[in-house]
Amino acid sequence: MIEYYDVSGCYILRPWSYSIWEAIKSFFDGEIKKLGVENTYFPMFVSRAALEKEKTHIADFAPEVAWVTKCGKTDIAEPIAIRPTSETVMYPAYSRWIKSHRDLPLKLNQWCNVVRWEFKHPQPFLRTREFLWQEGHTAWANKKDAEEEVYTILELYARVYEELLAIPVVRGRKTAKETFAGADFTTTVESFNTAPCGPPYLTETANDGYSSMTTVCVSSKVIIIPCGITANSTKGDNDNLISRCEILKSQLNGIGIKTKVDLRDNYSPGWKFNHWELKGVPIRIELGPRDVKNNQVVAVRRDTGDKIIIPNEKVCLETGDLLKQIQSDLFQRAKSEMDDHTAVSHDWGDFCLKLDQRKIIQAPFCGRVECEETNSNTIVYWNTPKSKANSNTIANWNTPQSKANSNTIVYWNTPKSKANSNPIVNWNTPKSKANSNTIVKWNTPKSKANSNTIVNWNTPKSKANSNTIVNWNTPKSKANSNTIVNWNPKSKANSNTIVYWNTPKSKANSNTIVNWNTPKSKANSNTIVY
Image 1 (cartoon, rainbow, N blue to C red):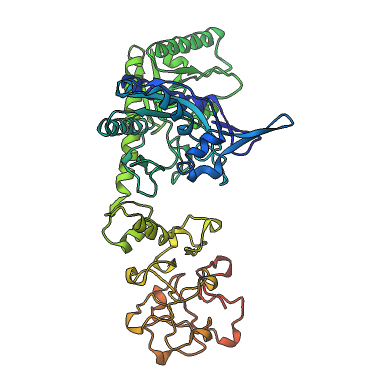
Image 2: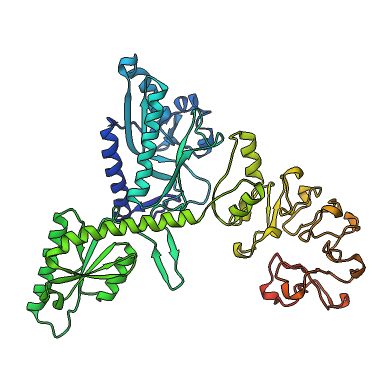
């Protein structure tokens, strides 16, 4: 798919991946031309003056702008930016070209590359410093026509995902905070998967590489592999088999089904099967001497592994139908997956719970920026690297998501009035002293505490230590200074349960693991140790 390059964040797109871009470009370019859009090209260099005219509009990616400052050994008098986007390049020309309503609408598009010098860790296809894109820029006489064009193009973007990439999407508007600077509103399509170009997945039985290479975007839709050639095969048999493979390739290419034949003699058929499956070719045709004799081929679906015997006279027709069926099945499978992970929530606590379950959530939202900021500051999710956390985010970083529960989430900035019985919040502990081991509500009245609250109600905050953690529902008379007690029966205890059953305090040391049966090697940051 790609080759790494000696400039960080830049990658060589090999033919197999570039064919995906070509398929998308061919489809989208054809559709926008039906709408009267014309292609153009503007320079990739932007003067500082032009860029700074719109500095409020590019504020979000201004730190990522790359500048040309030298020519050979000579400093350039005025640094020149490499386009991060083309508004500041194109619109001065638009202002010269549009003199009255008679010059409208003006509908232009350009296919180009842009550069954004990302400081975050680059990822091929997802976050790169140079990437290919298209950008359409249209001008209209009235707002109604402009909005209609926006939604027409939005539907085309959705079709790229759904019809070409077999990925279902949700169409909608971005929030006010996410709206492109200077815009009235910004539309978007969002998918359940962040890797449109073939996300890796692992089945219960084996690593199947890439889950799908759709039947539309691959550089080869069918691979023909000759089989059954042995040491006993005659030259005539071999020549006849290869001739039949070439004829079949010509027939399929002739009706628009991109087909290749793998005639390499230094690899076995089994190796070739695996090679082309990993490449993502949707259909493999196996052809051996017996198949030639019986006037048939064996077609194998990559997505299911099903083998289908097809008579020679029906190969072209049935291969085309099979490709359509594979594309439909891939989309329906992804659609079912997205539907199964879509939930509706009307309560903030339920919203956070579903978010931790990695759901797509439909929830009421007033649209105000202050509410958006409040919500985004009170969500902690498991896959955020500790290095990316900020003062608003305190989580237990090392707890696997599968083992996480309501006891391992800390929300710093959630107002007390909005908290519910599930969030574990230390309202009065200074941020500077808090860490992933702090799970205490010092000043919560006993009447409001529940079985999830770990507090010793009468111990002053200054005197609290690892020996004074008691569950609220444990009678005070049963607790003592040597015992960390949890009211739950031992049979129901788990790795999140804080219990120190029988070890006398005198035998405990800094290496002692409180969870009675957890080996030291399996202990994690959820395990209380003293």
